[in-house]
Length: 103
Image (cartoon, rainbow, N blue to C red; front, side, top):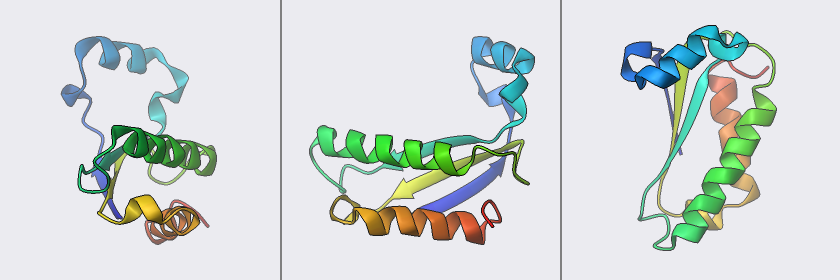
């Protein structure tokens, strides 16, 4: 798993999303994306399940404001992640701690 962090650039968002976020109180929060290669699993059901698990995990871990507000986070899963299970979430926590998002 790889974690990348980038400065938020609202000009890359669609116009309607950027307009909605500029008025929303949570527009200051970091945005998260999960990318899962087709090499992880050929079955989209498995890839979507992993994506949902990681999004839920990130949502629960990043509820409080962090030092990386106004940033975008990208998690990329590598082949073999479909069999990982709980160690996958532990690795996610380790990456978030290394980035300074978790204490």
